[in-house]
Length: 122
Image (cartoon, rainbow, N blue to C red; front, side):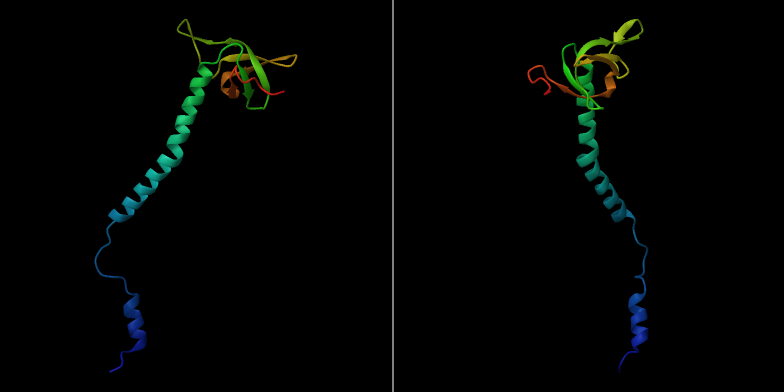
């Protein structure tokens, strides 16, 4: 006997019986989050911490590049006072000298510190 063709297609399209579990879906989302964390978020956090530490150790005579692209030498650093003691922060005023011009920028606006051994190219 030949089965009824439309009835067979409808039988195949029916969802399997029994409730689906969310465990595999949650496991997949967790795995995707871990991949994003270890490939994107964690390296960016480490890079930001290294940059902030380098900015805290900024000293007179260092050659720097600002976020605006100005290549200059640090002339003076004016640190903010916290509880009567100077504490380096990202809002400190840094006076830089580029050619014959002196500029005052925030410490946090310095993009890169070029070491004394390798002066900035002019």
